[in-house]
Image (cartoon, one colour):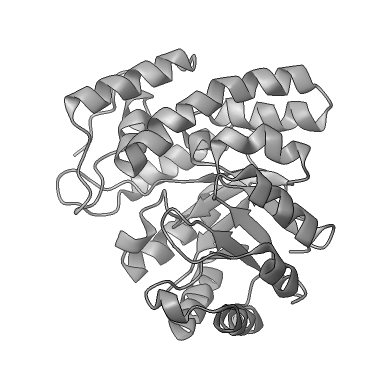
Length: 306
């Protein structure tokens, strides 16, 4: 994969689990992927934050990546989240993802020993990962979950590595996103990680997005990108006005359990979150239903699954 190849809207897909035994629901996962691939998504991210990455077993992760590659059309990109707490474990995850068919990997910074994660430590970590990874590396800045900053100056240094192709910025800070676009220039891709900022991110130079609201409103998110690329700014702006509040209410407001509940309401396969995450209560479900309706999405009866 060459630099700037990551354009368009990628979906950070959920990982469905069976209600009966908590195991990975491969049938439901494949069904969702087939549905999402009917619109012009650029690809998917497997094992990201929305995919409950830290709760997946290695075999489940590899199986999900493999199934995504087998199910999606060849022209859709499969990204895999491989950030782990050690450089060694991250490299192992990159190898496993590549072997399962991932086109590129998304790597968040280690954070357990936060005080020791200096720019020098992070530079060495990502450089060694990029040296060893069989597939290109996309950096992942997600301060909500990982309180280690990938500052623009450091990112500008890291993209000099030939196997680091860009960054996903989930900070929700449009000024930071702009600084990352400046740091990367034409050398690498910057992908928006917050559904509230897809339109504004594209305006300031982002090449696309990996946005969780897209799993709920895939047609609207991809239409937004396509309209912007075609110069239909008013149309793109109207679509942003639809998906922005949905992101705030469901993705930001209820997290992965709420996203899964929303998928069930839309007739896709959401299923339960994996403990210790708890499913949303009735009041929260009511707010999720209201947000989906406000966004103009069609609700349907959930598919009964064991």
